[in-house]
Length: 587
Ligand code: ZN
Image (cartoon, rainbow, N blue to C red; front, side, top):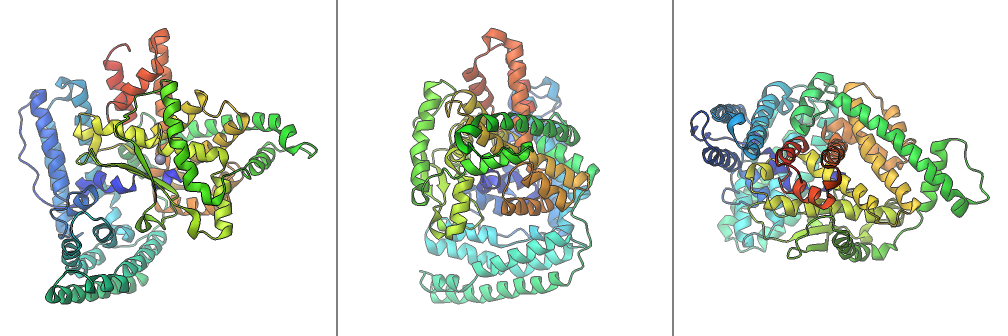
């Protein structure tokens, strides 16, 4: 499930501006200041933003302030707003038109981030209606599970954070006003998870640790108080009326879409594009199904309904999959084959010195429903290994394992590896960490990152991975329909009043999803906004850019050069990359 899992470990980093409190750096530079001055200023703004949040530090591997907790109160929101306004004032001292094109884009990225912060605080106001924002468990879990320092030091940081938990939930209670029932329910579920994290196992761990008796006593007292605060939060939240509808409406949706996706299209335009792509995929899949019918289902009558016959073929082929106990080993086996294919076809530059480490997902990262994810080193730790986490199916019930193996069948497993690893997320992130711009690395654009991985799937198949087999293209069609319908679903749910029945019909009948997957997606569409569109949005923008470059360059267009250049700018919005590429002249 790449769409739900990838980059979770880096996500907090992109939120840093909204997270915490301190002073913005004094504005430097003069109007129309030169590029050197802007570069310094941009870096100062970015690092000041990172330094403001101990929580962002923990998730990006900077632990100096790990014991400090940002209280989500009015004062910290005021400081966030002041930081954003000061940042905008600083940026206003530079005329983007006079900056070199690469810096003009950094300027735009920073401006978007600060304006987005202001919009979140003043207009969207999620802090007031989404109680699931408030959880103390994430940073504590990371400190307990990441061996960055001796155990006792990490426990001291946790102890210090525990001391702030009662004040944290007091501030959260002060914020919540008319939440949605869906976010209220999620917050209650999360708080049960927090209590489990702060449960008996942690007590035993403290007792067995190198903390001295006084420290242990203090830890346990704080732990008890923290648990009491979480239970009080649960009790309070359980009685809060939750009348707010989860649909945010077209106006707020378009605004959020602009800030989060930074595409050239509006959400409404993207919906039309996705609907057309759905039709194209259905036509293509039907053609493959009819061609494959005699080979696999000879003697069985072909249903008259096109979606029905595609569904029959998809179901039939899904029985071809790896044996349960070979799941991780098969993924491991495929990675070098993908690298070799990319090399032989000369598709893009690969860094042979930075191999991908396939590992079984560490236990503390399991349980999110994620089967596969990439843990990539951040820009401050560029030489660390990149891990491809694959969850072995040992703990699955026979039914759950069978269902998952059908989902990640012989063909889809290959597409998953392309998406997550080569030349998808792993390859893109290695390139991004080499990009010279801290802004493009830190303010990563989710649509570019996911769009690249989705583009990589199609590009590899176009280039002959899977030998143009109709089975491969059919399964690709099913896989890609998920991305297409995610976008339609999200936009229709939030701006067009799509009902649950309509949503399930779109996902199950038109995109061939299992009922459990569709039910999960419906839940996710109610809890988030815009994020589900990023995959298709980035993918569509990259395909458009490639077509445009082909038209501009004619015979001089070179696919490898296009890929290497595209990846060289870091995780910037595709539109920004397009202007950089087009400004760089012919290639
Ligand atoms: Zn992904």
